[in-house]
Length: 59
Image: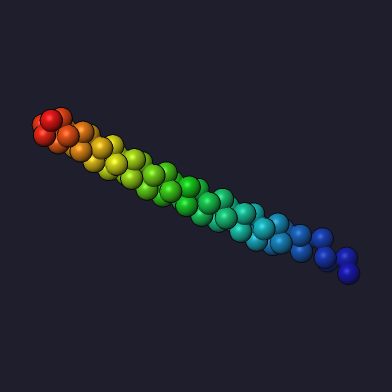
């Protein structure tokens, strides 16, 4: 039982790697959501501008 002192290192290493993996995945999800929101915002802004120009031309 005295040789159990070295057992903490692999457990800590596994926990650290899993934590880094989770942080990385959450960051990637956040970045992709921000990109999607930005693309949709740009699309709708362009569409609204186009509709307003068409409305002005027709009137």
